[in-house]
Image (cartoon, rainbow, N blue to C red; front, side, top):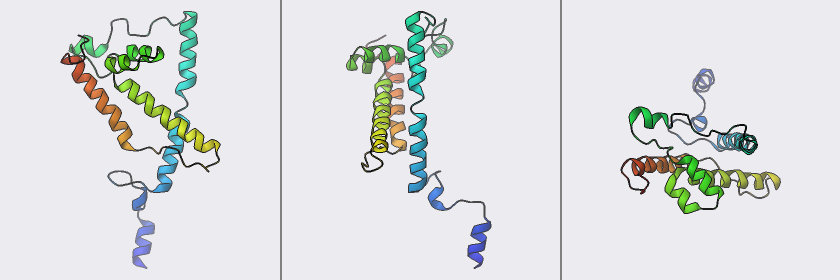
Length: 162
């Protein structure tokens, strides 16, 4: 009895709900996935609005007036260098060129599309099709690794862009 009352009075959640260093429980994982799936649709209206503004010539500048802040202040390329060109190449269907400009951009977009569309399919099927990707930290690690590769490739001339 003392153990039960001590546990009820303690402020620590059960071990399945802890996410720092431990595996999250299935219910917590499902809530996180649903939340990220809903938030994941936000870039679409923002991108659509930016596209319309660009098409109308209202918002003609995509970069900072002085260029990249990290490049101008530290003298090195940042992990995001080539991101705009990578997006432009992707929109033109040039996947290899986009990977050469910045591999993190196509990786992030591919993972985002897979996550969003698989969860949409599961949602539309009423849960009958269990195809929705769950959020896993390794998904972020893939994009971070691609960004770090980009940082090294740009600064050491490994991508042939310097």
